[in-house]
Amino acid sequence: MLVTPLAVFIVGLALVPAAFTIIESFYRANPLDPPTRFDGLGNFRRLFASNAVLTSIGNTAVYVAVGVVLSTVLGIFFAVVLRRPFRGRGILIAVLILPWALPGVVEGILWTGIYDPSSGLLNGVLSSLHLTSHGTVLLGDNRWLTIILIELVQVWQITPLSALLVLAAMQLIPQELFQAAAIDGCGAWQSFWRITLPLARPGIAVAVVQALIVTLNVFDQPYVLNGAATTGSSVTEQTYFISFQNLDFGGGYALSLLITLITMVVSLIVVRAVYRRVDY
Image (cartoon, rainbow, N blue to C red; front, side):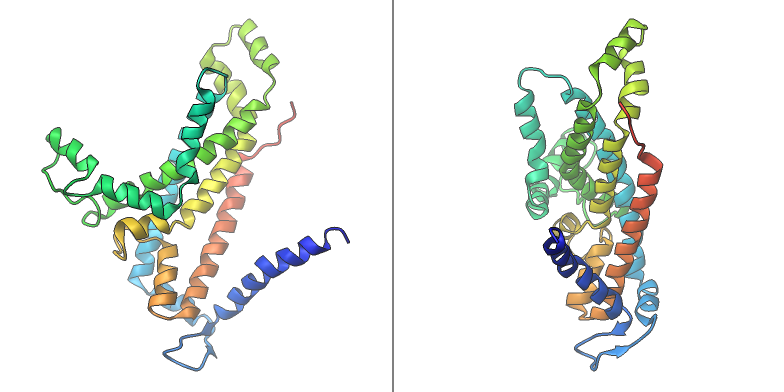
């Protein structure tokens, strides 16, 4: 009885919309083509026949690969740096959290100035080093360069949370283990590889999963930095375009369902592969 209010809230907030999405994904719902009617797998067939959707799937796969790897590696690095107390540690943690606290749209606008072809910081640095000519357009022309530059913005956003999750796991490791390892002649690298990394795996697993979920559902950064161009569009962007620009709500429901299923399956695989129960 105590958990009933929470259970009702969760069902109303999450499960009912999820069930509605599953049902509507099999219907052709378009206000420009009434009435709403059952279409079976028609929405899914049209999605996989769309070049824009297929391109966005490939883009999102690169977003996930780059984002998860970079944010996890950088998160572990920052967690190791912040693990021991030092002067200014609190200030450094506050600065580290700032990108994570900023909305994705705000970050996109900030980095638009950095990537700007005429007055952007990155263009200025590259042209001063004679690597590019002044006014080079970095976003939109080259697909892979566009994806990498957009994902760097998202990595800047999600790395702080990864670092805090891994740091929390590292704080639970008993100091006696490191002292015993030092007595046995283990160096810093051996202690990290044989003690810190294995015992921090629960935190690393959570960091990987949260990075995976965020990168699979990336929307703000590609939309703000690259607009509707297919060179950097994500699957979530295509859901928005299909639903609210093309008014094909059935296709939008179907693509949302696919994103949800992929997120669940890949997250479960990552948890089973990375997570290990740790008994100190």
